[in-house]
Image 1 (cartoon, helix red, strand yellow):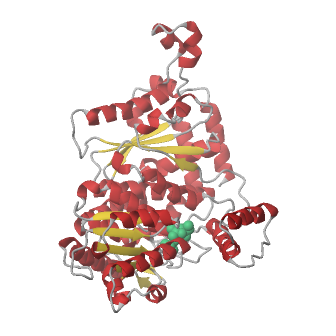
Image 2 (cartoon, rainbow, N blue to C red; image 1 turned 60 degrees about the vertical axis):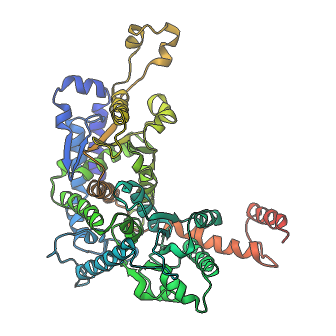
Image 3 (tube, helix red, strand yellow; image 1 turned 60 degrees about the horizontal axis):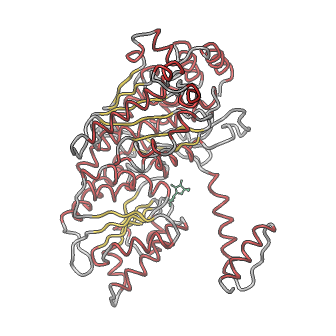
Length: 540
Ligand code: F6P
């Protein structure tokens, strides 16, 4: 992070510290308008933050000092900015809806391949939806089971729930990710083999959890649908989404039934690629294209808008303000829409796998905080759980409140009540309740300290008319680009994930010791003892 520019941010924060959000509003009747920006169907009101003109100016200078505009261009134009893996980062190409667009990687335009895969996915999804793709016994597909983990699970799982109002209700989608056999077993209890399509989704097609689940699902299917040639069954009920054709065919899936993508699509950025096949079957190709259009609108906004009106940039700078300036360790994402119940989990991988890094791009340890802890729950459930701590606890937890003016399920006054809570929470967090207000409300003096709300708790409000494929796409792109901007400013690589490798390697060693006749047990004393206890219970 550019230290000269950061020192100026710190000075601006220091100068602003004596003024509360309440005072900032009192001093400026135009504050809400001043600190509201819109793009791609979303309005961001960031006025309830600990910011004034000087803080914002210093933050914007910090972005400029990181050459943000130039870095954005590098990403969009296919430069190999993921240098530890020597890869371009081009999830934006996946949703580039301009029919004339060209995006070059190593001198080759990737757009024809992107369009071809989209067309292949659309044709297949249509066939499944229309009942033309039949199972081995000639029945139509009623169940889709996506087998994948991390980015090959969280995106389609989150979006399939989010876009349920746009789905074909006759097809049920399931997502199996955990290597815990319970996940697969409980899912298989819900489906009928002759009407189930398994989508094995794995960029590498080597991920232990996914391959284990896929093999067990294959065994189950072959047992349920006996045939002289099991491959005939598998070919009707299994398709693959991967970058690795060799491993796909080794698994026994015909590569004609494979939907490809490319190494320049990071796992956690892969929903708009073929990884979204389960979602496309659920909502149909036309709605999937609307999702892409929403992403694209936000992409264009991010690439072209001035930094001070740029939604992803503003969100990123506010995140840096609290993480680095106020030492907030986490932030909460609070969607006031039941359909977005898995959004926090999705954003956890996006943010924490991207920016959970502690060395700068030149391999030196960072001297400042990087990626924050992201968490959240749909409102209003969170209000009756952890909001107490957000309102009155000792931790500073900036929150993003996400809501919609219209509901897909209008019943009585539910939606007004939901949104009343949505608006009231940010009001309460910003303005609190003073001791005087408590007394004026008749609170006895001994309870005043407990009923006082300090306020001054920062929130962003993200409001759209309605949850649609377009607004969802734009929302995801907004957070993707926010994470990108933060990575640029923190000078870290946001598109690799070496931190997940060690555990994978050690698990392989441990697995040998769990199952071998004579385990080597060359671990530390704690791990050795735990393995021994496990083996004893299982009589090994
Ligand atoms: O957990 C690490 C990771 O590599 C993620 O980045 C990725 O989304 C996930 O594993 C799944 O990988 P794959 O799609 O190759 O199975």
